[in-house]
Length: 549
Image (cartoon, helix red, strand yellow):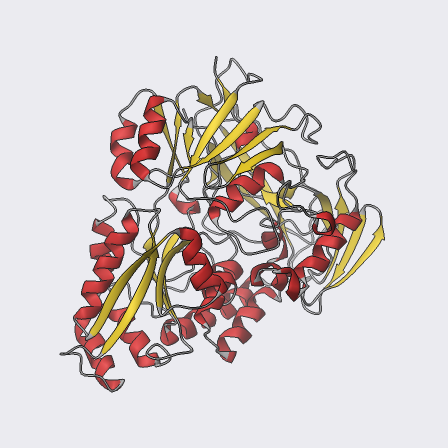
């Protein structure tokens, strides 16, 4: 049924610094040991003449791939819950819908494999003695869809676009390169030197899809990925075809892949049940139990310990009323996350801290309130100079319609804040309208969305408070920035943990935004779709799927 692999670990560290990436694990294995190498201080005993600590972990493998093996050919249709994609400019701002499509047309620099370890992708291997100086080796023999050979110059062109404000680069992308001295050593080697160690660099590179900015054509994108672009019909579909020259031998299996834009969940479900589409990127929570009982449908879920999704309530901190920290704190204590959890049909978990509770960087005493405390919220409103017994503040809350749960969560926020004198008007937007108003224009007061940060706590905190969605808060705090930066500027896990603990405490006290529980995410596929693997950020690995005949 499922072929989702996952490692039973409670921490994720950047361990690929000195490793050469290897091929994905074979799906027939039921249990195995994984050995990781971690850079440590020199006084740690040396074993085998290499300074390292060896961590042995058990990896449990879910149901193996059917013994009949993969079948080539066929056309798969996938439904995406959005009106459209933003396009194919991979150095710009993006959504999960964009990632789903980009991952078929483009390749990432590196990636988390299906055991959740960093492995090579277009960067085949790398070395770094100190996490400051990095040498990356470009995979040889890779061809772009137009037959041009991949070289180091294509990365240099991408870095140039990422660092050019006029190119429309996202803050998350620009942040990866802005402090680096980058040099092309030869056609297949790149050297990057940072002023400070960056222990989160590989994690960032796992979400960088390489495109060609120099000759970028938004109407006909060219990548190195498993599928070639065929057609984009706005608000209807994106059609792709198998790349016969893909660098991963014998992949993909499908001849054709079509993404249909179907924003209405009921329509998505009907299309899945009728066989009009083969997969749904996301199943609405009300439909999970019904679909699980259907023998023609399979439900795929990222294991909870690797699920980094969360509902995210933004407040614009640079303008009244949310420039007042006491008002923001009052909002934090007024929210009833337990009531919100009930709206998700028993799926999900209480969450107020952007750092995952299973992470080595999670601070349980940071001060994020998971439970409602109305009396404290009202007292904070009085400290802010407002009477919580009457309407003291009026504000608008933008949310997007593609997830039906969003409305229910917004209604709870509306009711909660009314109890402390904040009147909230709900405003429904299509997701791309939401992105334009909130992320691009910062033209909002409050907004609800969902985040899917990467594994490293650098991104779990950064995405929430600093980059992309976090940048829309317009929250400035030098102390937070100091500790957030310090957390990635060392390979010492203890020092990273100490820095991130302090950053969480500052964020909890300042309350520039609110995490409103973890988002349970399910994908669905028809029974004839084989080898359905769901990536930790919610993407499906179509290049490894096939259709049973």
